[in-house]
Length: 361
Ligand code: ACO
Ligand code: ZN
Image (cartoon, rainbow, N blue to C red; front, side, top):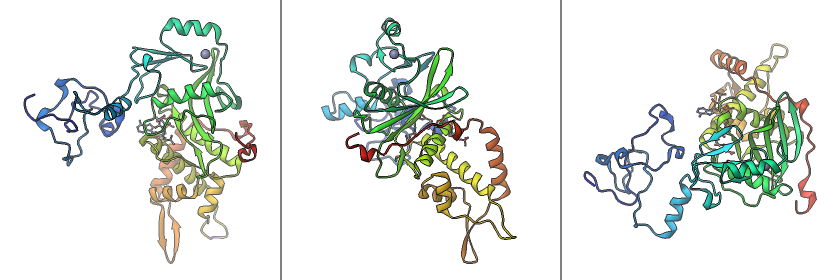
């Protein structure tokens, strides 16, 4: 190679295909194997020097690496080209541990109802003649219009839960995949049409969480993203916490998209409460952080971080006051007009179980 010396662990810029996605370059979603002509060999940095924060290229490895790090490279790289799921074709973002013999295929075929995978269209067609599921297994605990939620016990419906985790891992980078689904419940959101209840997204939840987590992993399948379903899933997770009489928080770390969605949900939910407060006898309306947390089931720490993020807290004459500027109020009202998908608590039929009393789930 001409120009700089390319060695194991070095960094160099790579020409992107999507020049319009400026905000995405820090994310591993863009990881891919690149051809030589897309490498900028004039700007090779050795592995010690990362001063300009340039995105790193996938390692070119030759025979330089040990078996262990080779495993890392293989497991880090996206291994499925395309997944057919009902009428959708999904392009995975990240690695998912599907059986290795299925990873070289141009398309992996999934039954959209039981999520079983097969290596060919014929294989799927054969499966469909036998599979009579038209909705996720488990109990339908919510229905309004065409939106339903099914509650699935990771112990009772192990195969479905594992298949769901495999599919979800394609779009979740920073989460460990649990092979043991027993300690989890899965809440799958579907959209109904004459062919059945089609999966849109889901979240998982530990049956018992010592850290007040009310969501472990959350996902909207890519064809449905950016249409408000993520916040609908989040809203649903807090409705469950309200029924349980608990406050909850999502498991950390959040992904970049997870943080954006939660921030947006928390901001809107808290602003809705603050703007609904009525002044009494000429006094300023009052509310405590604890009250906001109790009403919304949003954990106290998240209420505080949201108020700080929105920059609402001021210290005035010895006490904390919240100031809602006109900009904030107008922005919020505009955003709420666009938020059409909402959970209707009246349509939720859910009785929480006390898992601690059940011995081993
Ligand atoms: N770029 C910029 N903003 C975005 C993007 C994006 N690609 N995607 C969502 N947002 C913003 C939206 O603008 C919206 O904010 P707004 O209403 O204030 O405008 C907010 O995030 C939520 O948008 P929704 O349409 O409700 O969310 P969506 O259906 O796209 O789902 C989710 C969000 C679940 C995070 C989705 O992006 C996803 O599945 N990502 C992959 C998996 C993942 O990262 N999950 C979270 C991991 S953290 C955890 O599991 C606890
Ligand atoms: Zn099936």
